[in-house]
Structures are given as C-alpha cells and as structure tokens.
Length: 338
Image (cartoon, rainbow, N blue to C red; front, side):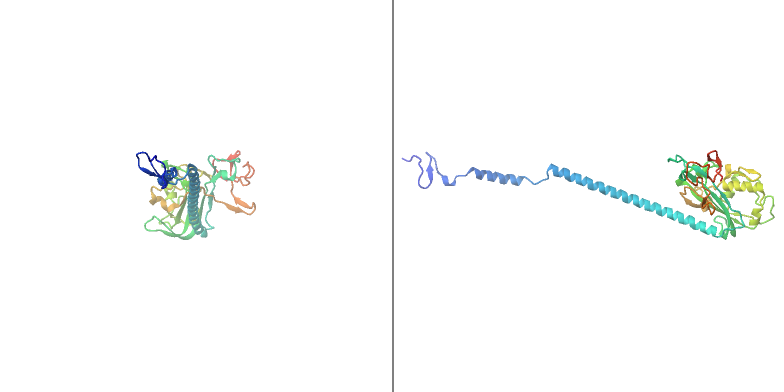
C-alpha cells in the first residue's frame, strides 16, 4: 500500500491527489523579485523637495542680478543720451556766441544786466552757498557781420546789428503779465537771442524820437523787443537817443527798473524777450535752446583774479563781506543789481 512516502524520483503522491515534484517548487524569493520588477517599471526618478527649493533660490538670485544689470544698462543709456543732448545744446550756443562776438563793435554800447535769486527750497547747511543761487542775466551789444532777417518779406540785410541774449518770458494768463524765468521750472526755461539789424531810415528822422517810440503802448514795446528784426537807425543815431526814451529801451531790454535821471518801469508789463511757441512764426527765430536752467554773464578780473560778478565769491555764510550784488540788509536786494 502506497502511504505517500517519497520515491526515489523525488516526488511524492498525496492521498488521492496528483504527484508533486518537489524539485520544481516556487520559492518566496521568486515572488519578491517579480514584484520589485513591477514596481521599478511604475516609479520614475524625480527631484527631492530640497533640490527644488535650492534650484528656485539659485534662479531667483540669477534673475535679480539680471534685473540689476538691465536697470544699470538702461540708466547708462539714458545718461549717455542726456549728456549727448546737453553737449549738442552747448555746441549750438557756443557756436552762435562765437559768431556774434567775433564781430563785436567796440564803438557801440555793451549793456549787461545781472539778476540772481535763491534756488527755491534749497537744501544745504549753508543757505548762501554759490550753488544756492541761480542767475538770469541779460547782455546786449552791437556786432558787425552779414546779417539778414528771418521773417521780413522781402529779406532785409545789413552789416550792423544789435544783439541780445536772455532767458525768455512765456505767456501768462494776462498777455501783459508774462511768466518770467524765475517762475518757470529750470527744465522749461529757454535761452533767446534777438537781433535788430540797423538799416538806413527811409525818410526824415525826428532827433527827439528817432525810432518813433515815444507814444508806444506796452504791447508795442513787447513786439518791438521780441519779434521785430530791424531798426531804421544808424549806430550813431542809436547813441544819440534821448535819455527818457533810452531809459524805456533799457528797461524793456533788460527787464529791470532804470533810473538815468528819468525813471522807467516799462519792464513791469513789457520787459524781457517773449517767446510763445504756440505762435512759432513770431517766436521761433529767437529761440536758441530749450532747457537752459540759468544764463550767467561774467568777466574776468585780473585785479581780483576771479570771475565777476558773483553773489558770494568766497562761499561763506555771509554775503555782506564780498558780494558783488546790491544787498538789502544781509540778503539780495529785490532788484538784483550788482
């Protein structure tokens, strides 16, 4: 009777069941190996959380450096463009000044008008430091050259002209109360140049009123100074203009009060060069440059070894000891006349 004992072949038969080959039995390790292969197929390699955080930090640093470099590049480009514009404006001004002063007539009058004012809201420990003041000077002189008008038809030519440089007024709410340079932003101020060609009178001249100005209204004075381009008078005739009319002329040209035996206050309503860019036909010929914050007229003094006039030559806290300007107590006089 077979009791299920193993035979020599390594197989045993169960009771009533099939024979089992012990040599081919599956081990538990075989099942684990198969499971690992299945898991390895479903899982993928990835960054850990720490690696992601570190990568984002490095990226943020790189982007911040790139932003700084970009901003510096843009600022440098803007600065270069601004410097180029300033140099271009300076070249235009100096070339025109060189042309005009090359023909300076020593026999004619040279008038200089100096005005200075404190810079609004100046910040500094020394309120009288030279940088605390801004200048609004004017100069008028006669020059020889080949001059011609820009607006007159037909064109008028001459070899002698009266030339004036000044910061320009702009129209205000009242046509006879313009906004002067002191009331304008520095970036909006404009340097103006007017020229009045001296031409031969077309008829008899009244020696007491050679230019017919005695009855001028304020608007006529303003138009004569700002838009007219010639005067029917000779240089000698200009020098012989009566004092009362000359006082009005100087007051309008210099935009100041004048007292040369007679007092003129024409500057209050008609003084200074008026530029109205809304009417370019009347003003554009007198515009030299925009964005001129101040205009200073000075001469070199060999005696004092410095440029004059200055508001505060030594730059100390006190104006009384050395200022070239007329003072009202310890401050600049309201008329700003040196």
